[in-house]
Length: 296
Image (tube, rainbow, N blue to C red):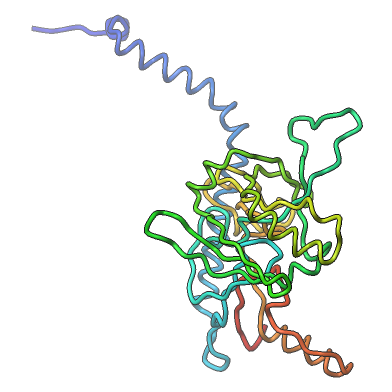
Protein backbone atom coordinates (compact mmCIF):
# COMPACT_ATOMS: atom_id res chain seq x y z
CA UNK A 1 0.00 0.00 0.00
CA UNK A 2 1.39 3.42 -0.99
CA UNK A 3 0.68 6.65 0.87
CA UNK A 4 1.17 9.98 -0.88
CA UNK A 5 1.94 13.04 1.33
CA UNK A 6 2.58 16.63 0.39
CA UNK A 7 3.48 19.91 2.11
CA UNK A 8 -0.14 21.02 1.82
CA UNK A 9 -1.20 18.00 3.88
CA UNK A 10 1.15 19.02 6.74
CA UNK A 11 0.08 22.66 6.74
CA UNK A 12 -3.41 21.65 7.87
CA UNK A 13 -1.89 20.59 11.20
CA UNK A 14 -2.18 23.47 13.81
CA UNK A 15 1.27 22.69 15.22
CA UNK A 16 2.80 23.05 11.77
CA UNK A 17 1.00 26.36 11.27
CA UNK A 18 2.48 27.65 14.54
CA UNK A 19 5.97 26.46 13.62
CA UNK A 20 5.85 28.11 10.19
CA UNK A 21 4.48 31.34 11.68
CA UNK A 22 7.21 31.44 14.35
CA UNK A 23 9.92 30.85 11.78
CA UNK A 24 8.53 33.59 9.55
CA UNK A 25 8.44 36.06 12.46
CA UNK A 26 12.02 35.26 13.47
CA UNK A 27 13.28 35.67 9.92
CA UNK A 28 11.46 38.98 9.57
CA UNK A 29 12.72 40.18 12.96
CA UNK A 30 16.34 39.17 12.45
CA UNK A 31 17.49 42.50 10.95
CA UNK A 32 15.76 44.46 13.72
CA UNK A 33 17.23 42.26 16.47
CA UNK A 34 20.66 42.50 14.90
CA UNK A 35 20.36 46.29 14.69
CA UNK A 36 19.37 46.63 18.37
CA UNK A 37 21.46 43.89 19.97
CA UNK A 38 24.35 43.43 17.55
CA UNK A 39 26.56 46.19 19.04
CA UNK A 40 25.94 44.93 22.57
CA UNK A 41 26.77 41.35 21.56
CA UNK A 42 29.98 42.55 19.89
CA UNK A 43 30.90 44.60 22.97
CA UNK A 44 30.29 41.62 25.25
CA UNK A 45 32.53 39.46 23.07
CA UNK A 46 35.31 42.08 23.05
CA UNK A 47 35.08 42.40 26.84
CA UNK A 48 35.35 38.62 27.27
CA UNK A 49 38.34 38.40 24.93
CA UNK A 50 40.09 41.33 26.65
CA UNK A 51 39.68 39.73 30.08
CA UNK A 52 41.11 36.48 28.72
CA UNK A 53 44.17 38.35 27.48
CA UNK A 54 44.64 40.04 30.86
CA UNK A 55 44.40 36.71 32.69
CA UNK A 56 46.94 35.24 30.29
CA UNK A 57 49.34 38.15 30.87
CA UNK A 58 48.98 37.76 34.65
CA UNK A 59 49.53 34.01 34.55
CA UNK A 60 52.58 34.27 32.30
CA UNK A 61 54.20 37.28 33.98
CA UNK A 62 57.82 36.85 35.00
CA UNK A 63 57.87 37.11 38.81
CA UNK A 64 61.20 35.35 39.37
CA UNK A 65 63.23 38.54 39.84
CA UNK A 66 60.71 40.99 41.27
CA UNK A 67 58.13 38.79 42.93
CA UNK A 68 54.36 38.84 42.44
CA UNK A 69 52.25 41.85 43.44
CA UNK A 70 50.74 41.64 46.92
CA UNK A 71 47.92 43.47 48.66
CA UNK A 72 49.37 45.39 51.59
CA UNK A 73 46.21 47.09 52.83
CA UNK A 74 42.47 47.32 52.26
CA UNK A 75 40.58 50.45 53.27
CA UNK A 76 36.93 51.37 53.00
CA UNK A 77 35.09 54.57 53.82
CA UNK A 78 31.62 53.59 55.09
CA UNK A 79 30.73 57.31 55.03
CA UNK A 80 32.10 59.23 52.06
CA UNK A 81 34.86 61.68 53.09
CA UNK A 82 35.02 60.61 56.74
CA UNK A 83 38.02 58.67 58.02
CA UNK A 84 38.80 55.25 56.53
CA UNK A 85 38.45 51.80 58.06
CA UNK A 86 41.27 49.27 57.66
CA UNK A 87 40.23 45.69 56.85
CA UNK A 88 42.05 42.38 56.54
CA UNK A 89 39.56 40.99 54.02
CA UNK A 90 36.50 42.10 52.12
CA UNK A 91 33.94 41.06 49.52
CA UNK A 92 32.13 42.71 46.66
CA UNK A 93 28.59 43.56 45.65
CA UNK A 94 27.17 45.44 42.67
CA UNK A 95 28.40 48.82 43.97
CA UNK A 96 32.00 47.70 44.62
CA UNK A 97 33.68 46.83 47.91
CA UNK A 98 31.11 45.89 50.51
CA UNK A 99 30.14 48.78 52.84
CA UNK A 100 32.42 51.20 50.97
CA UNK A 101 30.91 54.67 50.53
CA UNK A 102 27.26 53.66 50.81
CA UNK A 103 26.67 56.68 53.07
CA UNK A 104 27.46 60.33 52.46
CA UNK A 105 26.76 63.80 53.80
CA UNK A 106 24.52 66.17 51.85
CA UNK A 107 23.08 69.68 52.02
CA UNK A 108 19.81 70.92 50.50
CA UNK A 109 20.05 72.60 47.12
CA UNK A 110 18.44 76.04 46.76
CA UNK A 111 14.88 75.89 45.47
CA UNK A 112 14.81 76.71 41.74
CA UNK A 113 13.38 80.08 40.61
CA UNK A 114 10.26 78.32 39.33
CA UNK A 115 9.50 77.20 42.88
CA UNK A 116 9.93 73.43 42.81
CA UNK A 117 12.27 70.65 41.72
CA UNK A 118 11.55 68.92 38.43
CA UNK A 119 11.58 65.14 38.12
CA UNK A 120 15.21 63.99 38.11
CA UNK A 121 16.63 67.19 39.57
CA UNK A 122 18.82 66.87 42.64
CA UNK A 123 17.19 68.22 45.79
CA UNK A 124 20.46 67.80 47.74
CA UNK A 125 24.18 67.94 46.98
CA UNK A 126 27.06 65.91 48.42
CA UNK A 127 29.51 67.55 50.84
CA UNK A 128 33.09 66.35 51.41
CA UNK A 129 36.35 67.46 52.98
CA UNK A 130 36.73 69.79 50.01
CA UNK A 131 34.07 71.98 51.64
CA UNK A 132 34.53 70.97 55.30
CA UNK A 133 37.98 69.82 56.40
CA UNK A 134 36.66 68.96 59.89
CA UNK A 135 35.16 65.78 58.44
CA UNK A 136 38.71 64.39 58.55
CA UNK A 137 38.43 64.29 62.35
CA UNK A 138 35.44 61.89 62.41
CA UNK A 139 36.41 58.30 63.20
CA UNK A 140 34.33 55.45 61.77
CA UNK A 141 34.29 51.94 63.22
CA UNK A 142 34.25 48.79 61.08
CA UNK A 143 30.68 47.61 60.35
CA UNK A 144 29.44 45.10 62.93
CA UNK A 145 26.73 42.60 61.99
CA UNK A 146 24.44 41.96 64.96
CA UNK A 147 22.22 38.93 65.65
CA UNK A 148 19.06 41.01 65.17
CA UNK A 149 19.96 41.73 61.54
CA UNK A 150 21.31 45.22 62.10
CA UNK A 151 24.67 46.28 60.70
CA UNK A 152 26.04 49.07 62.89
CA UNK A 153 28.87 51.57 62.54
CA UNK A 154 29.98 54.06 65.19
CA UNK A 155 30.84 57.66 64.31
CA UNK A 156 32.93 59.52 66.89
CA UNK A 157 34.81 62.80 67.09
CA UNK A 158 37.32 63.98 69.69
CA UNK A 159 36.58 67.63 68.91
CA UNK A 160 32.97 67.33 70.10
CA UNK A 161 33.54 64.37 72.46
CA UNK A 162 30.39 62.78 71.06
CA UNK A 163 29.47 59.67 69.12
CA UNK A 164 26.49 58.14 67.35
CA UNK A 165 25.58 54.65 66.17
CA UNK A 166 24.12 54.20 62.69
CA UNK A 167 22.35 51.12 61.32
CA UNK A 168 23.44 50.61 57.71
CA UNK A 169 21.72 47.26 57.05
CA UNK A 170 20.04 47.32 53.61
CA UNK A 171 16.74 46.13 55.05
CA UNK A 172 16.80 48.96 57.60
CA UNK A 173 17.60 51.53 54.92
CA UNK A 174 14.69 50.28 52.80
CA UNK A 175 12.31 51.16 55.64
CA UNK A 176 13.49 54.76 56.00
CA UNK A 177 10.63 57.07 54.94
CA UNK A 178 12.50 60.21 53.85
CA UNK A 179 14.05 60.00 50.40
CA UNK A 180 16.02 62.50 48.32
CA UNK A 181 17.50 62.82 44.87
CA UNK A 182 21.12 63.63 45.71
CA UNK A 183 23.71 65.04 43.35
CA UNK A 184 27.16 63.40 43.23
CA UNK A 185 29.26 65.26 40.68
CA UNK A 186 27.22 65.08 37.46
CA UNK A 187 25.07 62.15 38.63
CA UNK A 188 21.83 62.06 40.60
CA UNK A 189 21.12 59.06 42.84
CA UNK A 190 18.23 58.03 45.07
CA UNK A 191 19.13 58.08 48.75
CA UNK A 192 17.42 57.65 52.13
CA UNK A 193 17.83 60.04 55.08
CA UNK A 194 19.30 58.25 58.13
CA UNK A 195 17.53 60.44 60.67
CA UNK A 196 18.01 63.41 62.96
CA UNK A 197 20.47 61.83 65.42
CA UNK A 198 23.10 61.13 62.76
CA UNK A 199 22.48 64.52 61.14
CA UNK A 200 22.87 66.37 64.46
CA UNK A 201 26.18 64.64 65.18
CA UNK A 202 27.68 65.52 61.79
CA UNK A 203 26.25 69.06 61.86
CA UNK A 204 27.93 69.76 65.20
CA UNK A 205 31.29 68.76 63.75
CA UNK A 206 30.78 70.71 60.52
CA UNK A 207 29.67 73.86 62.32
CA UNK A 208 33.03 74.02 64.08
CA UNK A 209 34.30 75.14 60.69
CA UNK A 210 31.31 76.99 59.25
CA UNK A 211 28.08 77.87 61.08
CA UNK A 212 26.11 77.54 57.84
CA UNK A 213 26.65 73.75 57.85
CA UNK A 214 23.82 73.22 60.32
CA UNK A 215 21.60 71.86 57.55
CA UNK A 216 23.72 68.81 56.66
CA UNK A 217 22.11 65.37 56.55
CA UNK A 218 23.49 61.84 56.45
CA UNK A 219 22.05 59.68 53.69
CA UNK A 220 22.50 56.15 52.32
CA UNK A 221 22.31 55.01 48.73
CA UNK A 222 19.35 52.74 48.00
CA UNK A 223 20.07 49.24 46.73
CA UNK A 224 18.07 49.85 43.57
CA UNK A 225 19.93 53.08 42.76
CA UNK A 226 21.83 52.99 39.50
CA UNK A 227 25.03 55.01 39.09
CA UNK A 228 27.10 53.67 36.24
CA UNK A 229 30.76 54.39 35.65
CA UNK A 230 31.35 57.09 33.02
CA UNK A 231 31.48 55.20 29.72
CA UNK A 232 34.37 57.22 28.27
CA UNK A 233 36.56 56.19 31.25
CA UNK A 234 35.56 52.52 31.40
CA UNK A 235 37.92 50.09 29.62
CA UNK A 236 36.26 47.28 27.74
CA UNK A 237 37.79 44.76 30.18
CA UNK A 238 35.75 46.25 33.04
CA UNK A 239 32.37 45.69 31.41
CA UNK A 240 30.11 43.31 33.32
CA UNK A 241 27.35 40.90 32.34
CA UNK A 242 25.98 41.54 28.85
CA UNK A 243 28.42 44.37 28.17
CA UNK A 244 26.98 46.63 30.90
CA UNK A 245 28.86 49.39 32.70
CA UNK A 246 29.84 48.62 36.34
CA UNK A 247 28.15 50.50 39.21
CA UNK A 248 30.11 52.89 41.39
CA UNK A 249 28.01 53.55 44.51
CA UNK A 250 28.91 56.93 46.07
CA UNK A 251 32.60 56.95 45.18
CA UNK A 252 33.90 59.80 43.06
CA UNK A 253 33.89 57.70 39.93
CA UNK A 254 34.91 54.05 40.18
CA UNK A 255 33.93 51.08 42.39
CA UNK A 256 37.51 49.87 42.97
CA UNK A 257 40.57 52.13 43.08
CA UNK A 258 44.15 50.95 43.55
CA UNK A 259 47.21 52.83 44.75
CA UNK A 260 50.74 51.44 44.91
CA UNK A 261 53.23 51.80 47.74
CA UNK A 262 56.04 52.47 45.26
CA UNK A 263 54.10 55.48 43.94
CA UNK A 264 53.64 56.75 47.49
CA UNK A 265 57.34 56.26 48.19
CA UNK A 266 58.22 58.29 45.09
CA UNK A 267 55.87 61.07 46.20
CA UNK A 268 57.31 61.13 49.73
CA UNK A 269 60.81 61.29 48.29
CA UNK A 270 59.88 64.46 46.42
CA UNK A 271 58.26 65.92 49.53
CA UNK A 272 61.35 65.12 51.58
CA UNK A 273 63.60 66.82 49.02
CA UNK A 274 61.51 69.97 49.49
CA UNK A 275 61.65 69.65 53.30
CA UNK A 276 57.95 68.89 53.48
CA UNK A 277 56.19 66.40 55.71
CA UNK A 278 55.68 62.91 54.34
CA UNK A 279 52.16 61.50 54.02
CA UNK A 280 50.68 58.03 54.40
CA UNK A 281 48.27 56.04 52.26
CA UNK A 282 45.18 57.00 54.27
CA UNK A 283 45.54 60.58 53.01
CA UNK A 284 44.19 59.39 49.67
CA UNK A 285 40.48 59.21 50.44
CA UNK A 286 39.64 57.99 46.95
CA UNK A 287 41.87 54.92 47.16
CA UNK A 288 40.40 52.00 49.05
CA UNK A 289 42.45 49.01 47.94
CA UNK A 290 46.22 49.39 48.18
CA UNK A 291 48.56 47.08 46.36
CA UNK A 292 52.32 46.72 46.44
CA UNK A 293 54.57 45.96 43.52
CA UNK A 294 58.26 46.92 43.21
CA UNK A 295 57.98 47.92 39.54
CA UNK A 296 54.82 50.05 39.71
